[in-house]
Length: 449
Image 1 (cartoon, one colour):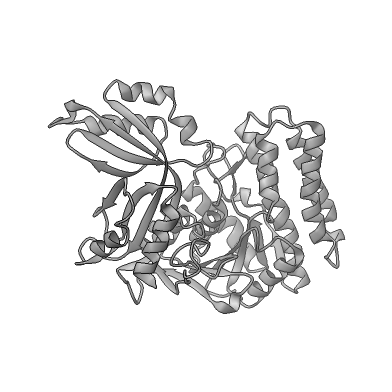
Image 2: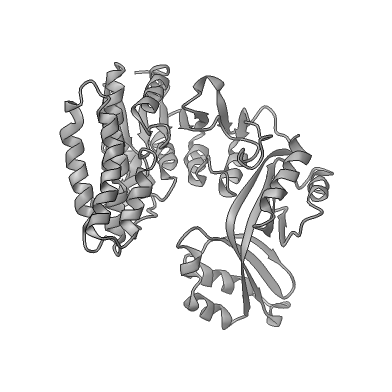
């Protein structure tokens, strides 16, 4: 086996069909350092599973959705030259999936939801290993739950790094000498062996965690775009792919909305100095973005991100003037209710901060109980309908003219809140969600075109 180890992750669009799986197989064949392959569910499957897990459905509706999943999976099987190698195993998984979908408590128990939603990756890894074998790549399907141990926070499980490393060294490393290991992203297991999931986008995180656990030198994230762009190419066709990013820049971009990167992916890479590559499985010949500790070129402006659906909370009290402990009290309450505060600005008697508001998150947690505690110490105002736009770069707080160029570009927009100076890599501001796309466009034109 090569001394250099690479972990490759393929997203849902990359393994949506037999044909796209073939593209991925050729990528693996061209890099003999790739010994572990992490896959998402085939495109469309996870959305169907989430619907089954979270929607009250009739038996007929459940069967209709299950049938849609079968169509996706069986279309891949139909193209295999030896479908009999996987047909029985796939049928077992489909029966398990159907039983979970019909469980009377599926909509109310997170442990059952995780078990159901994990089925997409369990099926795609089984089929992709079979596709690799058809390309003369010796491949084995491996159940990641044997290695990727987490706590029991179902739907948002936290990995146990020490246990993952110990199990990966014992169970995965010896197998890498014999074949390419194909395993599941997004999925783990708690100490009791119950299936857990790492949250949406967790397949990237899985790949980075396994790379760290086996001391891999590189981790490839193969998706449907040619690397990381200067901004979302769906907002402006002037966006261009970046050849390199630093760990710090990538972490900022992921945190503030760059969909091509999962925020947690960078943590293992930073800890172990693992080089991360992002490229398109459709067009691997076009290269991609390398994310490394130190870049050759570190410009003042690298990229612009947008994070949608932000909630802004303002807490105000005259008692705050010269008072000690007010901020601590506010953030203690937020932490108690598991609300993660992002941007923060302060004045003498008030504090404003933002909360990310993905579906079923803040709207549930920022509830009467949370408000009741806050109101005992301050007045509270909650505003919605905002996005955060962030300019990511280098030495931004110490370079003359950097901020003025940004503010000149957005002078015609109302900036509801500004955060700058806490680190050298970003300047963020809160704007109306009706304005955010235009804000990104004018910034991109001013900084990159």
